[in-house]
Length: 106
Image: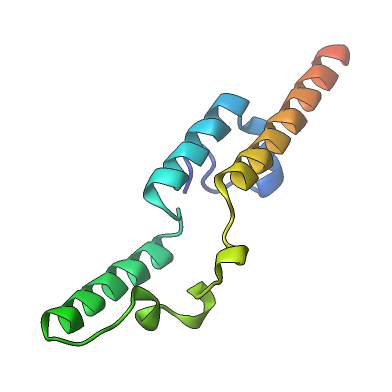
């Protein structure tokens, strides 16, 4: 789970994540890939399977070994700016809530 977010609802996570933290997570995801452990394991085994076949003279792609749900076309893959815009929206909502709390004296 994300640092400080594990076990919380999406609303609680949005309320508590700062803009700076969302940028850090976007950078991490861009560099390291999915935060979903199952997908990371699936991808690791797919890479190993591809390597074994390649070493033995066969042609294969990593996608040949991934679960069907992970096979996506290029137009379905989120671009870094899409992820950044998502996190900017979360940060904006977070700032609005903080402003509202200050006005209400919380």
